[in-house]
Image 1: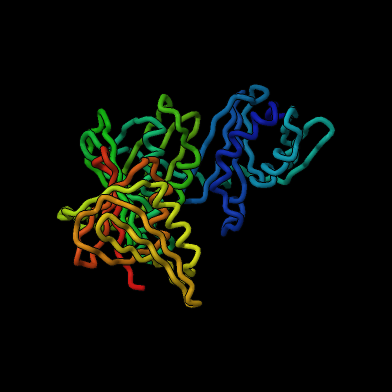
Image 2 (image 1 turned 135 degrees about the vertical axis):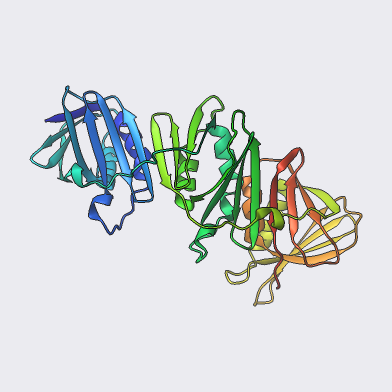
Length: 370
């Protein structure tokens, strides 16, 4: 029985959208599959890893009947990618096998029963709902995502804190050595709620969201789930349970020594200095003096790198070291021409990086010993 018929790109686009969360190794073999559901001309592709589920909806079904099956997601993706761009693709389901035809090419794939596919049970009630532009949400995630922990035993750090306040939404991420904070105004948002979004879900949303200010996204939040709906796509994710650290206590507010520096100039200098650091010791030394910022790095082979940057710095001298990766991460994520450093000389305290004209973005990096 024929399921669908459409151009290769028409089928490839929704499949590519969902296949990103499919793991190559799964405890449940069916999770390596994509669920295909057809009702008349409406076709859904669904992928699920038990933590996050992505659904896409298209209109290239054939016939009036309803059909559903699951097939190896990456196999189907590889087949479609290998077909000529202008191919017309037909998919049919017969005797528990999915047949994919395009011109003189024909593939028969084993399937698994759609009834065995573990779909996410959606929350019965959402505690908060709001809409915003896809670009605004993508930029919010982009400004903080790099500070999330990776496989930390403190599981609540392996995600992003989403803070809802009346008229505002904030995003916070920290791995215990650095903290990134960003926020944006939100019309019509009245709820007060804090939730932790898993790292994988954040990265998938960064991949899927567009930079179009005119394209909106609907976000629904409960205490256990978050749902994103946009562009015929639905993403439902579990939330991480746990008590997130009080980010307000980490962000310093008493620093009275500030200077501005070109983001690109500093980024390029740090990239050059990082060449002579090692994987185990990624430290770069920063010395601040009158109108000068000196960056230096060395390694066990007694090799050294040094860069001088002119700055407007009339304050007391400071000699401190930071993980160069932590500094490069934030510089790569920002679009501003100039960044603002705030420090407290004669202490071994953190540095606060902010943006001129953006009171919401704050990035705190703890010093290190080298």
